[in-house]
Length: 399
Image (tube, rainbow, N blue to C red; front, side, top):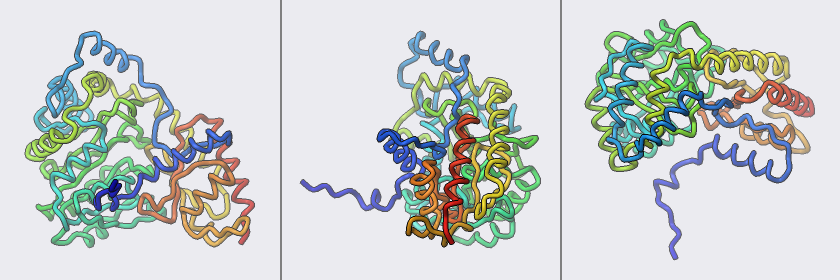
């Protein structure tokens, strides 16, 4: 039997976040006390009113196929949310609901990117961006940033990266993995560059909108002139603790929404009707429904920054959103333990899981190989113990 897989599959990397989470689970199954700070999932339950909306949909027998783009009711609710929270006028026929924001992004890229088209990815970027671009046979162009500027792209650097082959820019705010948040002035500066290029579509990934420690979220599509050049991606996974419900959505120019509807119709069709009902209730809710999580994540961020500060070789900044720290750990490169030298962030991540029994994710998966990602979506006690273990393990490294 020929077990050959396709060249397309073989060109893709395994998701580093999923791989590390799998390793953590396997070690736990062997009885090893692993603290996993590897997955991007809120450690909260879905709010009761949202669960009840799903239960009500089941009891009402809303269990049949829906339109590919989603029910009218969920798209109307999302349309109202965009207007209420972001000042964006997306009509229901400009909205496509998908099986998570990951599918939303894949729909956009596969609908718009041709082989050889370049897609600019400010680094650090979410692990799946580059792989989705490869699926479309596009070319990921990594635009480096640094911890000194809180991992945000500078307008001049963005302008320099654009050429005739550039078809798309994908960025997120708040950002996974860095927690960076672009304020209105910074968002306007990015828009000023993009407005000079009519052929470029920008994906603005705003899935962490409700986990934002700044006074106000800024949507790129809200900048004058940008509405027809931006696809806004969001969903219910992060802000409403609904990761398992798998529900993401886009607001887009009508022609892009139509394209995404077409490609989704040939791959998955519509997402689960029950999830759509719960999501409609979620986006119709006052954003303050996420305040309990927001307050907890802010407290935990401050705790982790305090607990990890002063460790030689680890450089920290203060993220302003999401629930991650993204320290620069290049100061640990060249150090060794038990005869093994740490040469890169992959080595550091393996050292921490083997010696400290703390699972993190190497920054190489996010296009920033001098860093690691730590999620603080865990209890205060677990985070305190994780920081203690990391500090102790690093103290054992030899120059």
